[in-house]
Length: 323
Image 1 (tube, rainbow, N blue to C red):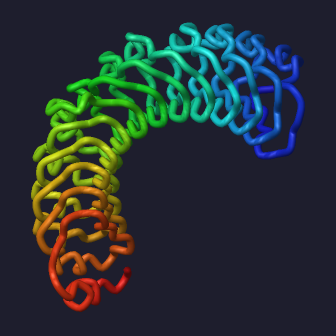
Image 2 (image 1 turned 180 degrees about the vertical axis):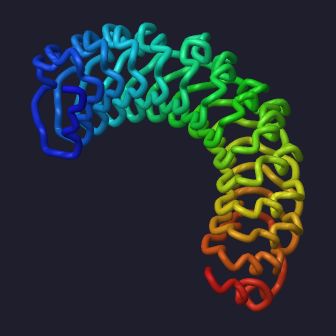
């Protein structure tokens, strides 16, 4: 027996002990069922195991340290359960891991300082929706194949490594809903390094403590950028010209900051923008009629700013056919 795939059924009960007898098992998919109990330690005894998917069940308890003995493991998925505790060091040391997904549990602790060296083959690191804390280890930038880094909905803090752009394969960066930043001018310095990465598609920095101004370097992020969320931080200053050059951008959220000044003229150049949120800032001046040149726009939120002008419906919004 090499593969067992019983996902998306209505299986109940505990993970059976008999699995320990399957010495040649390579792939075990039990996700999307109603399994309960703990992840049994003997799963780590299956030395041939390469893929383990237990997500979307009702599993409880800790991740067993014995799992670290499954040194051939390339995919670990235990998201959306009720698991808790600290991830064992032995699991972080499974150097073969490519996909590490443990989202939406109750795991805690900080990330090991050598994580980027211990997981050299990692492509997806997905730990959102837990209770992790501390800083992002600088060694993370050694994981050169990392494509998706999702640390959202945790308790991380401090500065983001300034050389995060060394992750040359990075496509999706999710840092939202943490405590990153110190409300200082250097908080977004890491953005400059990301401009060297031509693969970045989505950046979520929302709901943190990032301060300072929006760096002009930000408008030189990858032309592949489709979503940028910096909402609900402590950003100040003006919005720099250049965002309109992101021809693939469909979502831009800078709401809930302290931005001032007028809207950049090139906001009317967006070709695929569908969602624009600038609510709760100190933006002023007139609302650009050219915004309605963006024919794809269907969500425009400019509330609670200091915009002015007369006949806004007749002169501007009447031409926004998708709103």
